Amino acid sequence: MGETSKVSFPRRTAAKARTRQRIEDAARHLFVTLGYADATMAAIADAADIHITTLFTHFASKRDLIAAIAERARTRFENVVATQREQGVPVLIFWRNQVTRIAHAYERDGDGQINLARALAGEPELLPVWFAHQRLQIDLMTDYIADELGIDPATDHRAQMAAAMLVAGGRMAFDSWIESGRVHDLVAENERLLDAAEALLANGLPLSRG
Picture 1 (cartoon, rainbow, N blue to C red):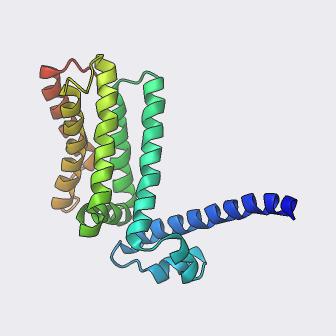
Picture 2: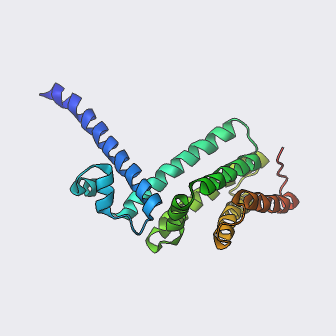
Picture 3: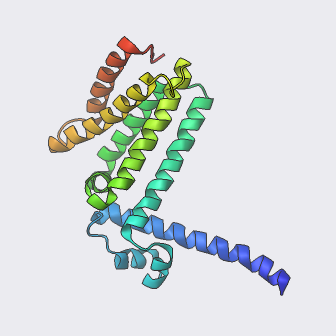
């Protein structure tokens, strides 16, 4: 009996993790294709091919679902930053590549990616999720910049100011693109704002694109 329990417990844990992953994947797909507001819990359960009661044993609400999806995105970003820092990639080159990649994704995937991004930023109940995502980006970029400059971010706040400026620049480019009716080149708009941010940073911080 004891040996059976030892075997079945990890199997149940793995099966539960797979179900949770399937739910998150289904939810993300519906948030992208339908929009956050129109993606119901019942539709998510159907898309994940599970009973709705099973869905509620894993996630109590759509907010919990999108928080889990955002957490996965944050983990991916943390891993990317860690890898780039280990490889000695200059912070401005990393950020430019990151922002350009995301801009291409928005242009390529169209309404879906935009719906998800605007839901995160525009739904009142999702504001804590959005702010946590923004905060993580700024914190990781602060450490990245401080490490490159050899300064202590706890006592020298220039790195945090630079990180906030870079993160805000990406958001400004996205908002400008949406306001234009998506007729502008989002990649070019990001490049323009990044150039402006780098020029400002160069006056107060010795950052270089290498």
